[in-house]
Length: 254
Image (cartoon, rainbow, N blue to C red):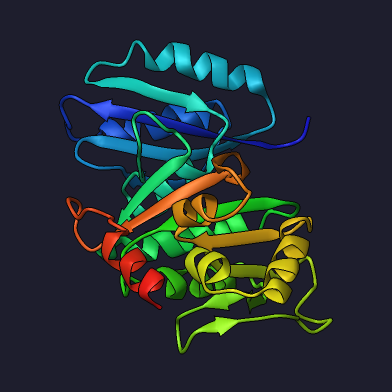
């Protein structure tokens, strides 16, 4: 059998001396390798494990249920959020109603960049929406995530340096392996016919597209929210309201 990874997470009720050592010994006896280990917020510990025998994981789960002072929260093949939780020691906040929406604040930019980097490594068609107020770090995070994934990026539209509305891209820029960065306001409200034609071509490509201001992009175009594989929200503070009123009023005046 091939080696597979598993994510194990347990809550500690009483962190007695030697508790981790006992669990590590149990894993050692079962010949299950510990790849990464970290505390994941408060009294919870997360581990990435590796084994070539699924039955050992099933047996491990049954044995750990008998260990005092801990409760097993998760024992499953790792999701992206599990891998990042072990790396960073904290879970990414998700919307309780919409599991496709992930929330970050500016003090979590390192976690956000790592999250984007892992998404960008995936091949094929995917569309990511990125909500956030101006100057919160949206575009910078996309570029940093592209660097982490060792991918080139191409601005289709942007306000990062000055207003950018592209009507064509070079052959190198049109590589489907690139990360295409789209400002949802600029591309729909401030664009021209040539730009919109380019935008439609890029949206139909089997590539990764990141759309800033995804709600306005949907409102002002023929696309709907179903195009998004995930939505990321970036705030200066956890309670900051992401409001487009001031932004859109300026745009319509323009």
